[in-house]
Image (cartoon, rainbow, N blue to C red; front, side, top):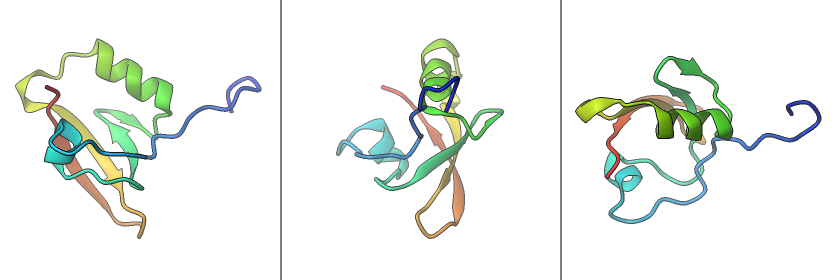
Length: 79
């Protein structure tokens, strides 16, 4: 919550087949726990960083937590 307003989580609800998330191996039910240097972002922080920061051709560095609790790092290259 943020000043009494519930914030959205970074849990992935759907991955579009053929899209950048799908190509990076992201799956529904996983949670993004880091984007670049920002640990445990909420949805607003995540979306703002994706829109405003230039990550270059290497893509957006993410750490993702699977439903079983294991984590992995991935780079997401937007279209």
